[in-house]
Length: 362
Image (cartoon, rainbow, N blue to C red):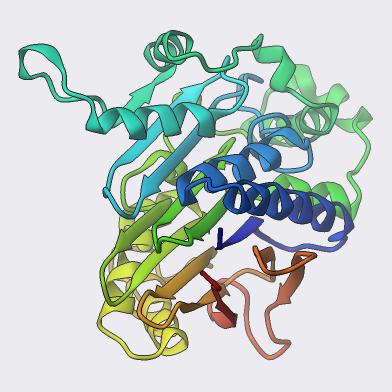
């Protein structure tokens, strides 16, 4: 059985990529094992993201950023390019793997409901957690998802926040908190993880998972749970495409960047040109976004041409760097890429696009 998977650990300013390199490769290997054993693209996509959620180094699942009140609230979504079904969850604190719940919700879109009720597409908070228990998702105490790394980031930046808003009670505490290393600054900035996949039948899937921005307002919904913003997948006889995004969540939601990327690819003969154009016209120059601010985004996109049994995996970002990895079932080891923004480019104001071709042997 053939297939191809690509994953990312969030767009940011990656200084030490070694820990992300390991988990990215592990996620690719797990996904390709599933594809080799006859699993579908959505099976492999879910498994890859679960590995990213469990590692503790990314801002998803275990190790997620904490809210302003110190709680953990996760978002996730997945989309099936063949059925066009989409499922997402938001503000979940007791689900070990939010992407698993998103998958269950996505699959449920095809289930018939009594009294002509329409199956839910997005579930939130306690209602989502009740549904997760009903469909057999692994459940945990919320504290289990809080890592020592996330707690350290929270204490540091919450102290800074309290100083800015004038909370005198925390001034002394803030002065006692050590300055974080570059690695800590990096990890606090990393955002949504994601994966895109195509199986031997030409079916694609895309998914994403995130703990949201550090010190977010409790209850905030990010792009990782928003239809058209965090991930998108569409399969046709001529082109199958899947993408997942990362970056400033509110800006990705305003521009529906994931869907715009896929729409742009269908109207262009060149993937590089299409991605440059979409990032420029639909994001960096979008009238929906504040032009006086730096606009950070990244996207991992897979394009597959069924008639040729070949495709392209593309990574594009406006951030200083982007860590991605990919693997075909024909490869023995995955490929890791640390993609930097060119030295002449300004982060948040310009975009870089790169990629790699692949072939599926069916």
